[in-house]
Length: 89
Image 1 (tube, rainbow, N blue to C red):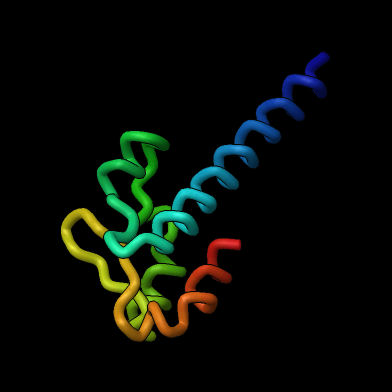
Image 2: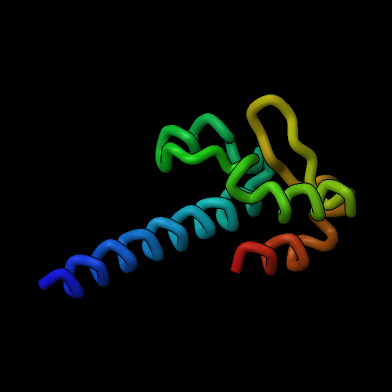
């Protein structure tokens, strides 16, 4: 019985992780990008903290920009969008 409970929790966590990555992926396809407040409302977690290493890497490469409530592609990021999206696949 305990094993079944553990598997369900692991599956739920994987499901949530996949949904959060999918949300980021789809959001970054939009001109306005990902609204940080909406991500937090939907998943509780802060995407800036959750994906800090990926976001830092992409920001250093000037592929994304982050402001108070948005994470979005730069003009360079739009041209190289597949590189950005690969980080969330």
